[in-house]
Image (tube, rainbow, N blue to C red; front, side):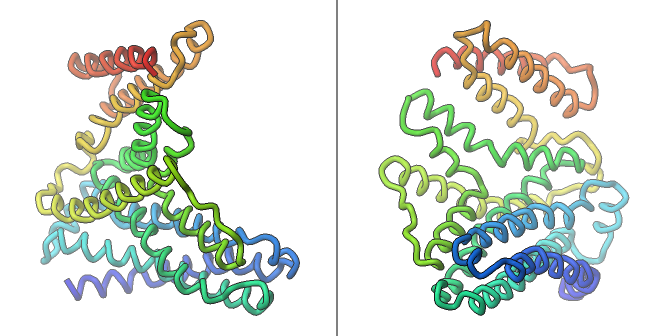
Length: 333
């Protein structure tokens, strides 16, 4: 595995340099051309960097595991004289390098620029805990993306799975909150997988500039703690599941229907029920348009899933039951 890891690392050297340069330019250039007064009042530049690294944590694992989506590439990689679990492990680790190295370079170069230009305004000591605290939520996004994407057998399905899982927990939390009529719907955003990165960045941005950070309390504090705990648990489970399931992965699955329980089979009914339940169908005359749009969209996603307009009897029953369950639940919510 060591030889393969070094071989792949050499292959990814130029992409690593390119990503690092782009990340530095995107983050550091605005800091250099901004006026000192602007830097003193606009402290959101770290949020922009967090957005860049968050996107990188989604894009890199999909790019490095894309070989599992095509029959020719799976045959090639699975024919190597090492197990395909080790192949995946090496590429997973290289992906982390492709995410963390550009982020590290941009983060510290940006920090030096800010400290040099507005020394008296910034509490520079907070850069250290901010850096290490950011690595964790970035890994959460990276690991969940890698696992969810590789549940699919095609590129398109993989990206759909990522979108499904990005909002699944928040959608369920919103429905439950609506059923029990408890609290502010906004607190459901704490169940988004990228929310820990957002909160961590916001907290340290305020500390850097000596500003008071809004501290959640009551129901919001509970939602934040629960959301972060669930997200961390899912990340750990995703890391384990990624390598555990790879031992039984088959090359012939590449390009076939994506029948994973982590994809369409569960997510389509879940989204259908949840979204329809959130429509106020008691006022049918005003909601009918949205109802038709969503049911039509759900049907076409089913078509994309099965790759045919001929949806089987079982699939049609599941779709119909999901729609009826969503309608029934809408009168409760």
